[in-house]
Length: 543
Image 1: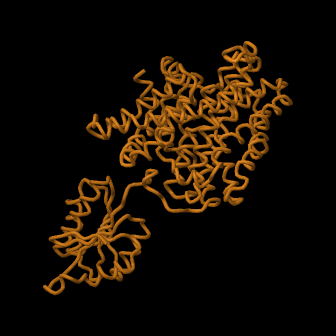
Image 2: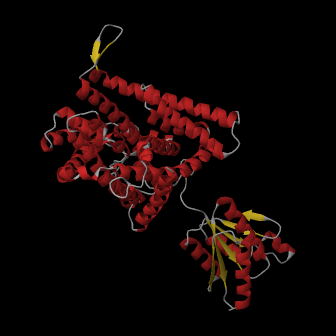
Image 3: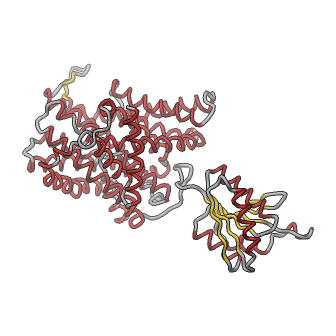
């Protein structure tokens, strides 16, 4: 099992990075690595790991749902009114019905077996959609109207709906329709109870998520049971996983919705704690993402795809472009979304992976007629919609969405900070380089050291480069030597390299000059849209 873990983590990481460098989503490379490592090709993953794949997927999905909850914005959701709620029901329902009707035509399924297939195909993948939407929020795409938040919430609610209907249909096709007698003596079928069960699961899921968030705040903030951020994340992740697992034994609430709601309420109850947890869950997802998609590839049955490939692609295309589009239209009816933003739902809300991997094989295992076809179509939906959806989301967001202001309290801002140190050959360069080194160490950032040399002082520049290498020896840095107007070059490089701050020296040779800023510093301050940190031998001033 240890060797299998190494294969999964290392090969999955490099497979994802190769795919990214080729312009494809990393998950494509991870899935392909899983296929290569799985029992159908190299067969290097131990049976024990494959048997634990379902449990490992539950852990990974719990992590990504916590990330989603910690990134939701209540104000943006409230601004959209019922859009997120409608996105949680209508697209999934219309796609499931469309799949059922098409399956009756292509595969001779009866309506209820087709609807069972529709529940499998129509479910949305949190493992693909959540990181995609969080990346958009980090970049600011669609945040003004809360579009990523609406998609995140709708995706979670739609999975609750389809998983409930899936369970009901399994029972109906396998054993017949069960009836429930209420205390009043009224007898209802499971189908008649379904709307009440959906409402109950959603309400209890939200309530339990809120209570769990209150417990986390009490333990970690008010009573100080933990000593560092790692312990905070351990307690929060363990609690979220418990909510998901306990829901399997006490099925009156949605465990996945409760985990996501816990993250959402943590933002409302204790924003600093939520920010610390968000960073920790980002680290956990780095590992969980690899495990999830590599094991997904390892469990795909390639041999069953041949017979259903062409009709399966036809089914997926029609159900997506017709069935789900009808749901998207009515979900956004009356909203302030323009037609380009509505069109973005096609790539942003289409990906299938996690749920299909978890439930696609259950009908076959329970002896449902057509179970092998359902499993094959589930695998086909993963191989087609997951990579296309992940890729298209990032590609079409700049074309279809408007860019707004990023709220760092709701989502982790991607990328490391880069500091530009503008230095000359004076003694003040030591202070500037030391300040940049301190800032970079505190934020795990990088540095660009810029020296403008218009006089050709090669020896002085060489000494400055050596001093830079000495003071920034543990910092990833780049030394640049240019010529030209000093203030203009500093601002130009800062904007071109998208640095987070400019750090430079402040001069005052005479007593009366201590209240003034040097001419170069003043020119940079007046023209730079980027924050400037002024350094002198005795104090530091940020403007």
